[in-house]
Image 1: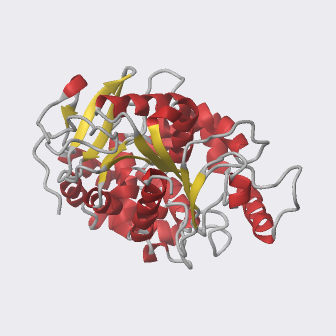
Image 2 (image 1 turned 135 degrees about the vertical axis):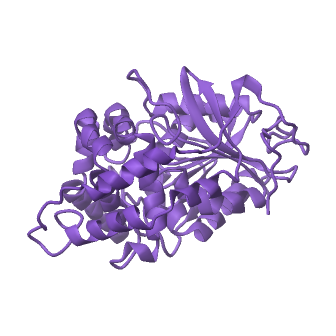
Length: 408
């Protein structure tokens, strides 16, 4: 089990750029401030009052999820949220780990920093997406730090305990610049960049703009067009993946259109109604995870509500949605349009079986020219690290070995 001195931060990478020095010092460079989560009790009481006063609509006219979250499912989850769920338990777990706030480019960034006791540890930057948070990586974080990684897990701008941008311009490329600065200030000249959802795009942007800073990429999954152009006919697997993406675009992308065009409009509801916020996020957790009809087989009610409660207590329903307004048009072209760039950084890719989009290796190699690992775990969906932390940790360890071992 890891033991951390109070307020410890990295004092600098080792000579190889693969980790930190063997000695931890209690030092706070560049205005780093230690942070602990401590939500006022009145905020939790207000949440319960609002849940008790929810105005419920009539049930959908269909018995399934095709119109959204069924009324009975949402009522049950919100009842548990109001009467049994314990946010303080989540606070207690998270506050065991070193957390900090730092100012970068005029914005406060919250991050976890779990340095490994190993002198050969590889710096690993983990980036989450929407509707996730650092909770996606909770079960994997301590295992990774214990297995020879120095972990840095920031919250995206407008998410969690990071600041909310007051001006436009905080898209994936600006966030990537902020992450490069964060790792520089922590003493990591080179590092592994890993992410899913928005984290995939931000990690890819780091490779585009700061390839010299990266030991390697771990993309879950890589974003590339799913239909081959000017080459061999698509395989059966490629056709199926393209069909699933098309179906998702037609029936499950309304949230993205709203975030990408009118995030402020939906933001009022997400900030004012906990039941509304719960439905908005719960529907995506259910639809995007790998299960046979019962989400709680892979994510417990407490795990689901940890994440939703974070969005509620931090008031980030609107600010998190604005990242779509900033970047979704560009990022959508990365997996629907012709590839216009190539990335030579050593890359590992993980494609969970219920992920969408789900590219083939031959198509991914058109953009990512130095793929050293291609993993297809047996289980898992869009939230692979959260749903299948053991498989995720195995994939990260394999990618680290592939991108850092000397060529034979």
